[in-house]
Length: 233
Image (spheres, rainbow, N blue to C red):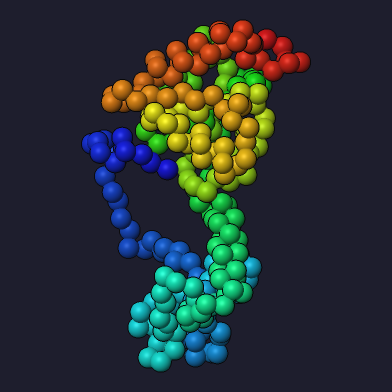
């Protein structure tokens, strides 16, 4: 997951090194040989239950594998349909595809504090460099947190487990409206009271100083120890 800060600013990065030996995974592609062998092809046909159908490239075969589709309702073979069961099939297939995608997209990166802690931090995109520095700054103040960097949507089960493992989870974002927090609340059905927004939107890049101060202020205001109960300080 990226954001406007990354998309609109110049950043230093390593030069791109390309190798012609690299083989890209194109997913489920029906070849001319598959079609000649008699394999059934339907552009929206879920053949193995993961919600992801096979597709063909333009010109794959002279008389097989072509399809015409449209934005309105169609059946599994891309044929126009107004039948209710065909509509239900496609909607349910997309839900299944969404669940499959949760494990195929880049997974979150979890970083544990030095000791078990009741506080977690979720962040993504351009907040990452500042959060990496804030993690060390907080540790220097005796405030231990676990962190989770979200890298893709839809969210994997790792996000649910991370939130469940902490009493309070700070969600660090560079916007006014807590967009990531809202998405987590609605998609993962999380109690919003458990997600504490850390929002930066003054037009400048977020800093480690800002994150550290916001988290430290919250902890001081609630007078709670970051160490989980039953753990030695």
